[in-house]
Picture 1 (tube, rainbow, N blue to C red):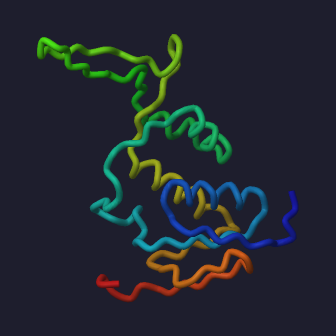
Picture 2 (cartoon, rainbow, N blue to C red; picture 1 turned 30 degrees about the horizontal axis):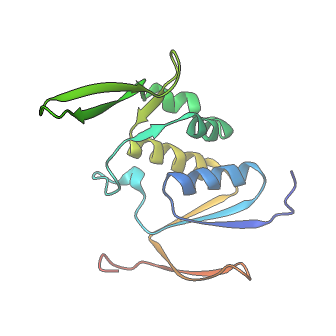
Length: 157
């Protein structure tokens, strides 16, 4: 697909933004990815959300688009069902397993940090992706396709 060197701006370097940047780059777009935080791959402490991702078939399909499904699944834990805790009228609690699929179908629990780092690395590895950390969106005009960013100078910004 030829895009005639079109430029796409992606706002946010979380998992979805990084995935979008990688997909657009593979489609031939020149991509500028802006993230307000520092590069999480260099952080000793992860300041994002701590809950793992529950990766379903839809998420696996997205990872497949950029060739990272197998690598991510190596680090995942399969979850075949969820547990429902139902309090009975006599005060006891009963546990019920509700399967996510049939037979061996499952979803995978994967580290949010791991998947974000892998997707950021995938996007940054594309020759036509430029990543800007510590940049804040100042204005956006969706109708004209224009936006303005500013670098974040200190921790109080």
